[in-house]
Image (cartoon, rainbow, N blue to C red; front, top):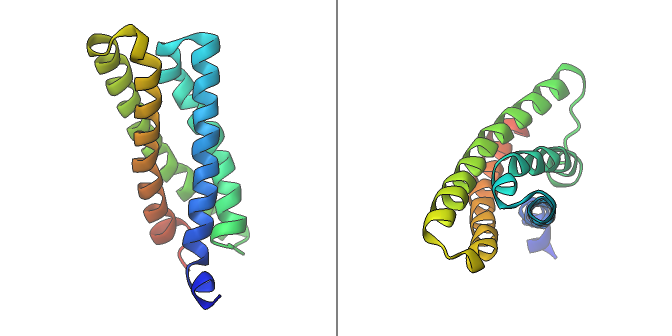
Length: 143
């Protein structure tokens, strides 16, 4: 029980991070299904990330880092969070456009492109989760 309390923040971050990844992947699948592979890797990926930024801020503030900031401090917190997430959004979108639209279209057979896109989405999310935790811990929700 003491170990759980000690690692509560990391456990909560991983739990809500997994939910955020699932939301991101579900949105990717929906965008791919309704608007196509290239849309899902470009504009759809950016839209999915925007939705996930909102979800992640609320869950990180309330359940992970238990932020009690208010006023100007809360404003700084949300601005730092959004700026950090927009940075990782650019990285994620770059990975998806390069891996999905360039490598996927040119080097992956058509019948495997959807699988390739999903694998790249998961790998991009792993990189983003690690970077987002570091940014959130050291910059946004620092105590």
